[in-house]
Length: 355
Ligand code: NAD
Picture 1 (spheres, rainbow, N blue to C red):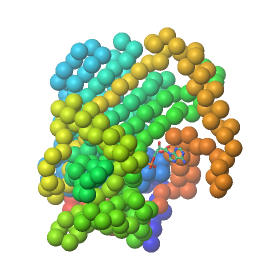
Picture 2: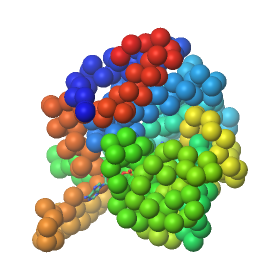
Picture 3: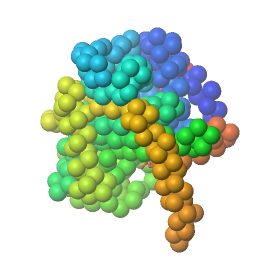
C-alpha cells in the first residue's frame, strides 16, 4: 500500500512532528520544506523518510534544533565554520549565506563546515549558488555508521560521502537550466536501500555485500542487523575511482573541517553528522565570463546532438531528472510507501504528534 499526499500537506505533517519534538516552529518548517523538496526532486531517500531518524536524534540529545552555525576562523575568503550539531538544513543555509557575502567581497569563498546534523540533499546548497550565477563544489563526509566498503575491502569502513558540483550555464538572454551533479559516492544512497527494503524490492547486482563480505541483492543487509548482529555494506560507484572520491570527501569534508573522520565500530546511535568543504566561485571575477557562457553552451549543445544510444531517449544532463521530477510530483503529489509512513506515525507517537 502507498499514500499519495499533496506536498503542502506533507510539509505541515512533518513540521508538526518536529515542533512536537521540541524544534522552534520556523526551523521545523524550514527542515520539513527541505525534506519535501527532496521528495519532489525524486530523492525519496533524502525526503520525509529521514524525519523519524531526526526525531530519534533529537531525543538522544545529538541534534540541537536551536543551534546556529558558529564562525571559528575568519580569514576573509576562507571561513572555518562549526555546525554545532544543528539541523543541517538550517546551519547549511546559514553557512552558504555567509559564503555568499564573501563571494561578493572577494569573488570566491572556501569554507569548511564541521559537525552539522544531516545536510540532506547536497544539491540544495549548490542550487542556492547557481541561482546567483555562481559555481559551487561540495565534498561531504558522513558520520553515522560505516556502511560503505573500501575497494578491495570486505566490510563497511565509511559513510556514503556525497559530492556535488553546481555550474550555471549560459549568459544574459541565453541562460539555460544549470548543471547540478549531486551524488553519493556509494553506488547508491543508503536511504535508497531503506526505501527498497521497505518496499520489499531487491537491488541491482554489484550494489551490496552481506555481513560476510559476499555479494547480495538484499537491501536489508544495510538496514537491519544480520547474523551475529553484523551489517553488510554498500559498494562505492566506479570501483576504485569512486572509492578514491569517497576517501577525498572524508579527508576534505571530515579531516580538514575539524569534524573528524570515521575510525570506529558503529554504536547504534541514530544521529547523522555531516561535515563539508565547500568552494563557491563567481565566474565573472575570473575574467572569462563571456567565453565561459559561450563555451559552456556550445559544449552542452554538442553533447545533446549525440544520437540516442539503443534503448535510450538521448543525453540527459545532471540536474534535469530532479527538475522533471519536481514538475511531475508538484502536480501529482508525493507517493510514500506504507513502511515509511508507519515510521513517521511511530515517530509521531514518541513525541505526541498524530499525522
Ligand atoms: P543518483 O544516483 O540518483 O544520482 C544523482 C545525480 O545523477 C544527479 O546529479 C542527477 O541529476 C544525475 N543523473 C541521474 N540520472 C542521470 C542520467 N540519466 N544522465 C545524467 N545524469 C543523471 O543519486 P544518489 O547518488 O543516490 O544521491 C541522492 C541524493 O542523496 C543526493 O542529493 C545526495 O546529495 C544525497 N546524499 C546525502 C548524504 C548526506 O549524508 N547528507 C549522503 C549521501 C547522499
